[in-house]
Amino acid sequence: MNAPNTDDNISVVTARLFGLILKMPLEDRRRLLTEVERNQKDNASYVRRKYDRKNYSVNIDYTVKDHFYKGLSLNLSANGIFIESSKSHLPAFSTGDHVILSFEHPVKKEPVKITGAIARVDDAGIGVSFDQTLLDWQTL
Image (tube, rainbow, N blue to C red; front, side, top):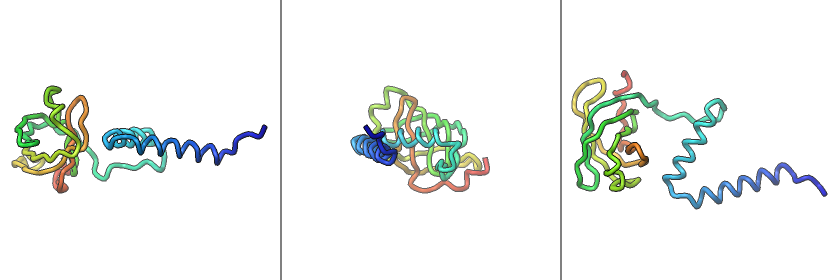
């Protein structure tokens, strides 16, 4: 009996992975992508974020689906923020929900009002992707 061709194995594995990924909800695909990228950090093909995250703890007022919430940010980048949220609030949030946020600018110490969409929801809170890039924060 002949040994399986390596190219066939690669093709079969790739096809199976692709099929599984196509069946996943978008949020699961994002989590998988993040995990694969984290595992590839030492590899030259690792894809870095466009903007680095920085720890930034500040009170956030935000509105989702016409409901007002208060939270605490954990980190910030030029294109998004992660907000700690009460577990009781998490079921109210869905990926893609429109968000209006107000918080203190990390450098200017002035109020910022910005819009975005929920990019992920996990047990700790929500990740929000801004509609516009907040470029002038990077001098933290």
